[in-house]
Image 1 (cartoon, rainbow, N blue to C red):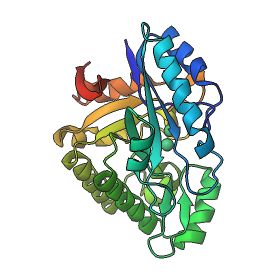
Image 2: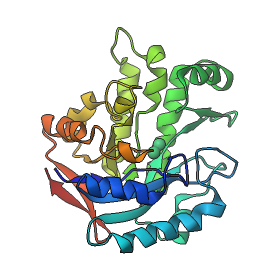
Image 3: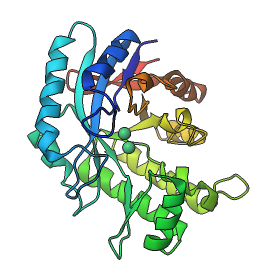
Image 4: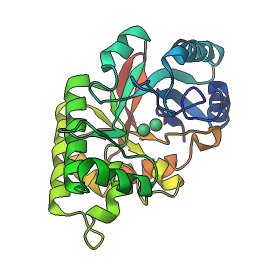
Length: 281
Ligand SMILES: [Zn+2]
Ligand SMILES: [Zn+2]
């Protein structure tokens, strides 16, 4: 199987190795395409994002690798950008200044619409629960609805190519949301609505496998049980490992492809000559 991995980190953000180490691992594992997507800088210091000072070096490193490995693999220069008005620049700023091949839009902080406090969704469960109490008064439904509203606003106003781990908030909030192991109606409604926004804007959804191979969630982000709904809404996918170390670049990728094909989604998207094309599995 040829692998196309569009969502990967490296030591410019919170990955652990140089970009070239990831490429060597990807070439060894027969990747057809490999995209770097470091976390874009916020307007405030944040230890997992690339800094503005390093952005140009990040870009030139990747441009160098594109040329060096051009006979072996297609390499892409991207960013995983958060949408958080007032806390990070608009996507067009990065698009226009860094000649990116594509953009992954992800939400890692939910903004409280009233107080503007930021709830980080991606740390430990304990920290999430504590901050949910502090910044959202412990109201998980309000936080989740704010998260999906922010995601919808990102899709319509920023137009990222790919929507990153669209339901990742469930990872730390599941104990507070699931009722006897099932999603409640209000949550299903949120999922259906956000998938409508994805479909209407022709965004590509990623099936992000990181939660599974890190042992932090039992299925993909998006939860694979929503794949029949995606098929009905004609949503296109890429499968992402969201690798932070070179040995993670292909982890659970095949499982992700299998999830899609099991539910009758027979193609993923391929970035080719500056455009997204359908690639049949
Ligand atoms: Zn992310
Ligand atoms: Zn990521």
